[in-house]
Length: 139
Image: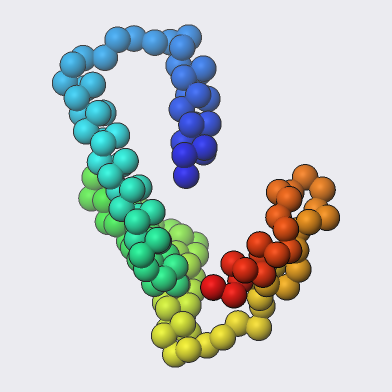
């Protein structure tokens, strides 16, 4: 999550370097608060993925679609189109479907690549020994 944020930061910094104007102190405090809350939110999200199952945590992020819809409508006077509702519903429904499938004990026939083959001969990939992969897969 760090590298995309750094890429955005440096891209915007390069663009805004040409039109920079100093910020008021109150605006700087507000942006600092937003940055701090964003950092805490990202940290909590990473912690949730470490502690919980991804099939449970990931669909909870889909509630962002609902919040964005509510805030966009109330604060920015945005209107919803039928296409937006259809696509958002598809994303939310698929998340609920995954949670239901995992709760019922459904097993996927697909296996992770680390269990089926090694990446020792993959050009450009990390060199991982088959012994290490077998020991990690058995845990």
